[in-house]
Image 1 (tube, rainbow, N blue to C red):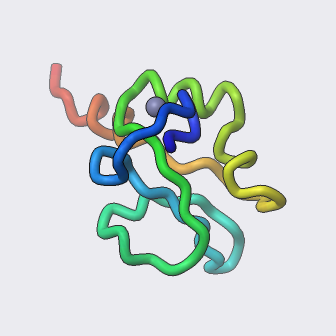
Image 2: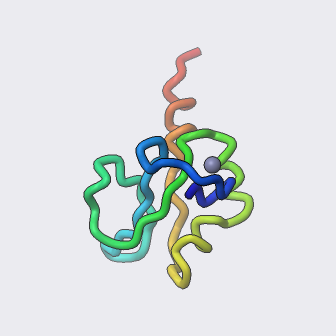
Length: 83
Ligand SMILES: [Zn+2]
């Protein structure tokens, strides 16, 4: 289920998020889907990412984790545009 729009979706069409604990707590996009730890799922769509930021859905998905939200891959994609 997507943490932003809460729609049921097969995991193959969602991105996996996971909390890492390397010198802090941070949520990262687990693009290889192989990182250990508790996972959450989100659509790789800008609307879901911005909704998740607004609703703080990341913190809610990882209950109790004072985790920094991940960088949106959509934003990264946008910044790659030239011109
Ligand atoms: Zn979604």
